[in-house]
Length: 561
Image 1: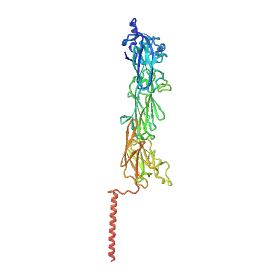
Image 2 (image 1 turned 45 degrees about the vertical axis):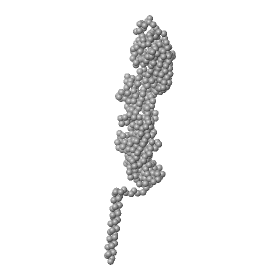
Image 3 (image 1 turned 60 degrees about the vertical axis):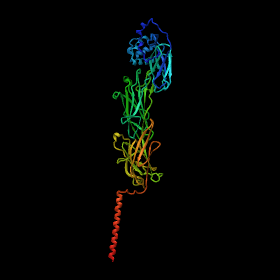
Image 4 (image 1 turned 90 degrees about the horizontal axis):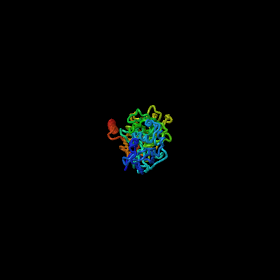
């Protein structure tokens, strides 16, 4: 007959039943199958240590132990001393000495939490006598193992020290009454972690942004079961790629309240931060309540472009063995056993528009010196050829005719190399909160006809040609481009673009190329425009002039005769 149990049950109150059972039939020992099921993906080696032994009385659901003594797997005197020293249990042991039967009676009155604490204390006072063991492999394909015990009793079932190698696992121990075959699930309490980008009140795993945009993040977890622990670490390690700058604005809340949560924060790795909740064991009574950490990062000028994401990865480090004494304060030190949740990564994508300026009749001929300007709602910062420059009276850069900028002011002797003596300032990172104006960035195609507007998110943009290359006509119309970010699988983003009165092609790296041709010569005025009217007036004037000359000549001839 099978029974499910994972706790020390009320039948431990043997002192009240021993007298009644004296003289009654006592049953001989037999083999008992212990079937264990794990609840995580880690490999586990479970060991059984006998805490109490005795004589088996009754069968089935009526079975119980009488004549209880210390079992073969525990140091009785050492256990009593440890129980008297435990801050949460010591009040239950006011006497100097206790028999095994008396300890069993005290345990019988414990709730689940105290039973777990008692199990942890017992785990620290075991002998080397192992009554049975089994190993369940890593993964989820096989979750159950079993072993046989040849004596009835109360047993501590625990993970073998140093056996939980999987960082995602946790050690467990519990007290089990064995008077029949038993099936039980070993519940190792492993915390979980989730992370999302918060965008327009929605939580997503990926988004797109412009350089200068602020990306909001939210990490969630729950307060784990910390019964049996004297100290518990709860540390979030967050790693950002070089294209993201942490804004040092993390807020930690437990059950929606932030004010009472003290944290220890420090730099982590080359571009990240670590947050540890101080005295986390103090939140043991909040088991199951939600933990949230919110913060932001700004997309910076080092952002990865195209289909390469700018990543932000979080991982939780937590205590996973209640049977050891931890040395660290709020964070683990070397040698402290800890578990790690799987890493959770969010992705932010950024793209760029590349302009290739060519001769309208010969695309192999690249044109330098074409000056363009980009405008777009929501554009915070756009870097042109690596930097963006706006005209400013207080700037300290000057625009050369080859499209580059220099801090050397023009002189009479060098002026021919400059576009003008106008000053420019280099644009730095700007947040939406401090800059509601659209950024108008100017760039000039280089000798190879190239110009890049870097750091764009999905949206609609206008590109204007301010000046055409020397000897070429300026574009009559602005270039209107619409950029879309298309999310496919969990790990990818592809870009697409459409251009009014033009063509845009997405390159292999996810950037967008627009080839623009310019024609040489002079523009003929458009029909119906002021130029046509001017031709009409000039033509009429010439006709009048011709008629006047004819009349004048005739009059002169008449006078001569």
